[in-house]
Length: 354
Image (cartoon, rainbow, N blue to C red; front, side, top):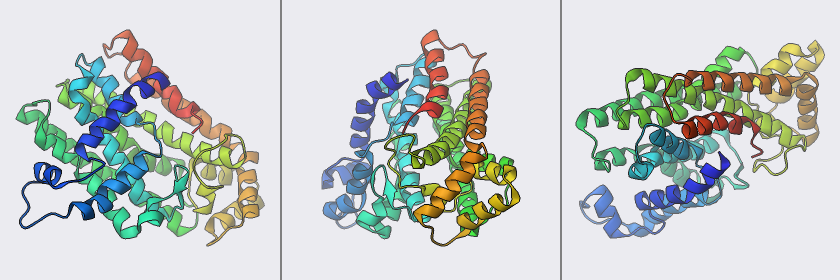
């Protein structure tokens, strides 16, 4: 799967650059947004939109959502090159959520560098992030693959449904870490993941099925695959945060004990509180609820999580979700190469090191 990611990433970035150029000029603004009522300011739009977006994109990221879309397209018997602009829809959406999430979480680091709101200010970061929810809709309007009206409408309706669910998930996540306490069940945490992370995955799969005119049962099956894989990805992300902070995973691009410092409720935290001795569980709650934490307190919280066996528990749960994802597409008539890539991807999201 890593080879597939490496092969397609340059084409994805080139296509994003067609949608949001690195250098904004009046011709682009008029062609993409229509004639101005009075006069556009390309310099201002460059500083407020294109520069922050490309700053984030150039820092890295696997582009796996866009590339998974192309894997599905090929598996459905179509030429991925014909649908490159559609592949950029989930990728642009994802990066928009990152920018807004970092403001909401008061994050300091993103992909090894200061979060965008620390570089450009909260106002520019929020506007750029929010713009990325709407820019992809222009792709459906432009209709580069010449889709019939019913498929375009289905794509619009799907995007509206999934993006609304995405914000439900983000709302739950914000609420929980603002409460500075742990009151939720594992099932509620997993539902948050299914909404916040899973819906972006579902957009990937459902959009590929819609634009290639797949039957409803096929769309449902690939959406289930993508949602389960995305939840496994989120759990893997939580594991990486802890492992990196314990010094096990090398460079990760986030600060030490990021999730603990933010007071985030994760599957590891829920399990550790359930499985630890009462005094250690109380202490973990106390550290998570603190307004500020020292590195020593973060190390103490990480030790509680590790001693409770929560890393192994979370990894086992992610592996089980990945197995369920593979089962969801077993009956689909993909070619051997597509099946191999989809199976490998469920392993990649858990075993990756960054």
